[in-house]
Length: 307
Ligand SMILES: [Zn+2]
Ligand SMILES: [Zn+2]
Image (tube, rainbow, N blue to C red; front, side):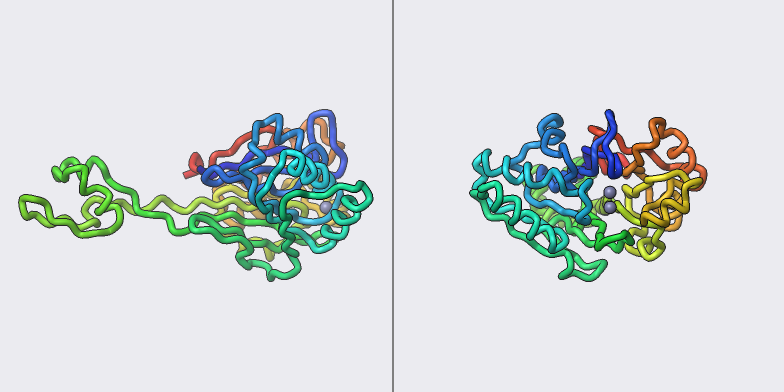
């Protein structure tokens, strides 16, 4: 399982239908929260994301629309009697913010919050690593220190060709040995090599989160051939000057980044509250990269569907 659920797609100011940035990346039943704008914990509850399966939180930068939901969520996890550690990757200043909030509200956490400052990593570094997937940090260009995140599968195993095994009349009790790469000898003396019944693994799936950033070509090499790219599109291109001044991107620029990086699917988000109708934003990005969609609160993207 590798899926992304969108919890918030708004830029700095929420609207009556859009909330500030947050999304959940779920891999093999473990949840990873990426950014935590206001209202995130209500979104998690609404969409039945199990708090007990939340292992790691990644925060891109310290603007309010990406962190203001965090103190409440961390506090709720404590009230839910979480008793195992939570990793938090974020710019170092967040530790001071949280310490102050918890001290002044006389709150304490009954679980270990393992804070990992993002300044410790160079862009492209692997910051989180498991047997099946890892997370790298991406260069974003914003008004303050800001990093994106790329989730990527690793060590994909070859697929077992059940029909081929049946055609070769291999008994079921040999399947696991073959899956593990062993050469087997059947009772009739015939030898079977694993290559005879194993297919190449599926292409590794990957998801890159890039919000907030101005048009930043350095990003392209880091997200080359990513399956699903979430890129901010705060403005339409007729507000290019405003985008430059605030270190954000236009929909056209997001499309250009997706095209240059040859990603499979572009997902736009972080929309300015000025846009009630997002169709022009979608049309603009599609003019340079047709395989584009709009992110929307509650939507789930199953990476396997992208092939
Ligand atoms: Zn933002
Ligand atoms: Zn920002």
